[in-house]
Length: 117
Image (tube, rainbow, N blue to C red; front, side, top):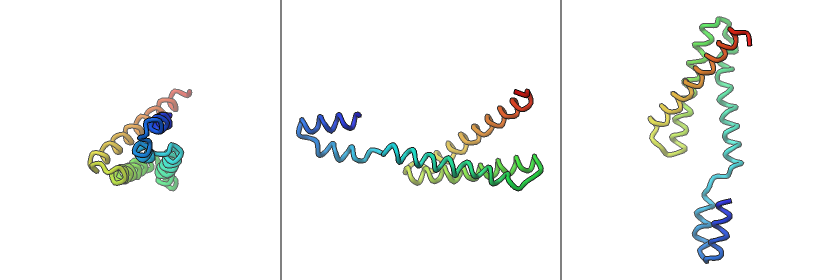
């Protein structure tokens, strides 16, 4: 809506072409949604594949944590590469956020599983 208002205002003021070029560089929401869905799907496959073939519980949990940590490192690096931001900061943010989310999810499922909800 803001882009349309600026374009309309630019057409009235006679400055439409410069702002129009600037607005064309805005991301497409459908492309962002598709990229997010693809990233989520690929990211969800990592722990599933890591745990699929291991029967012993403790080894399976360790394998999932290791595989997910490696995947988070790669995703953080890719984010830094594509976003043109410092790699270390991006990798640490993605790794810490992902491990924190995984720990909270693990804790909640253990809590719900032990209480019989």
